[in-house]
Structures are given as structure tokens and as C-alpha cells.
Length: 284
Image 1 (tube, rainbow, N blue to C red):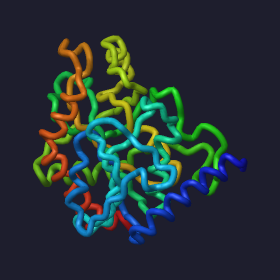
Image 2: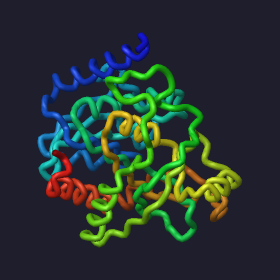
Image 3: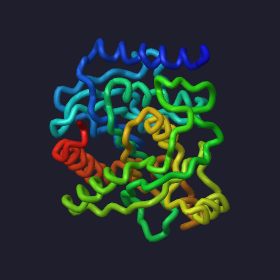
């Protein structure tokens, strides 16, 4: 183990210590709330918000729709730590830095991770506003959050990604959607580096590779979560058809507006998933 690995472990520990000074309750579930979805954390019981800038080594984002706060509290009897917004590789951060907050949330105690995002749809039959349960992913970002020395205290050198998104928890999420009569598709998420939206040729490539949605986030966080032994549920909000499918120009405003439009449905699904996790003993 090298000095660089020791440094990562120490930085994670320092961030954890700073958060625990504000709230000693260990979270059971970590949530990453993507573009336009951060309001879910506003309704936590006994919620306590911490700006990312107040947490040592936590990176900050300037992307509209990402508030940049960690909210700790309870929802449906589940102790949660929710990121209101995330950072991205296209902002100039390495994949390891992008995934650093996830390391901290798991080190705080979270054993289940729910990652959400806004994504472009590659399946023409899915209209904007469709919710997609992530079954698997394609990592097209030219960096990797585990690149460099490994610290065995955080996870194994070569983590298996066969079940990056827990099959058991995917069943739970689908059952929760059915209970609420919420339409929930299932598919493969492709992560590109951004910040440009994909070209029509890139969209065609991704469709040929088997992707159903494309975005600029999520995968570094999921890799780190699995590296540290947490189980993952991933849900994309399909906010627009990807380039070349309709011929329309893509904008970030369209992304955030669609996310806001389906926010109530998305939040109802998250609420039911949390209740199901608690009821089925998945948080023990």
C-alpha cells in the first residue's frame, strides 16, 4: 500500500469525522439526487443540511439543478444521507474525485445506495418523463475511479461488477413501482464524459452496443459503491430523446424541466422503495 492509498483513506476518514460532528446518526441508505430531483431531501424528518463546501475534500459543483448539499435525516423510518446534486468529470474533476463523496457516505454507514440521474433516451418508444431502472451500465468515460494504488481497507483491487445493480433490489424496486401503479422500464445506462451531448453517430453506436439511456454521471459512483461492498439501485429519468432520434436541438433547460415535471412520481417511487427496504429487512 502506497502513500497515495493512505491519503485517500485519511481523507475519507476526515470527511466522515466532520459530518459526524454535525449529525452522529449513521445513515442506512445513501441517495444521489440528480438534475431537478434534489427536492426529495427537503422533506426528510429531522433533516440537517450541510453544504459540500463545509465538508473536507468534498468537491463542489456549479451545474444548474445541483444544489450542492448533503442532507441527513429520516424518510419512512429509514435513516438517509442524500446528495442534493453531484459533480461530474466534465467539470474538470477526475473520476476518483467525482466518486469521493460516495466513499464518504458508505464509510458513514450506508449499505444500500440509490443513484438517480437525468438521461437521454435511446429507445424511441420511451417518451420524455419515462423512468428507467438501471439493469447494467456501459462505462464510456475515459477515466476510472479505481485507477491508481488500491487500499485494501476500502475494497479489493479487482472488484467484480457482474451484479453492479443488485438483482434482488431491482425486484424490490419493480414491485414498489407496481404497488404505486408507476410505469418503470428497465435498461442499460451508458456514461459518456460530456459536457457535449452525444452526436447522432455516437447515439447510433451506443444503441448498437445495447444501451437504452445515456448520461454524464452515475457510473463512477456505482463502481466505488461496489468496491466498498454496498448494494446499488439505479434509476434514470429519461428527460429527452438523444441526438438524431427526433432531430430536435438538446438543451439543459429541457432536461431540468422534464425532471421537475415527473418529480412527484419519482419521489413517490423513492418513498415506496425506502419503505420496502425497511419492511423487507434489507437494511440490516
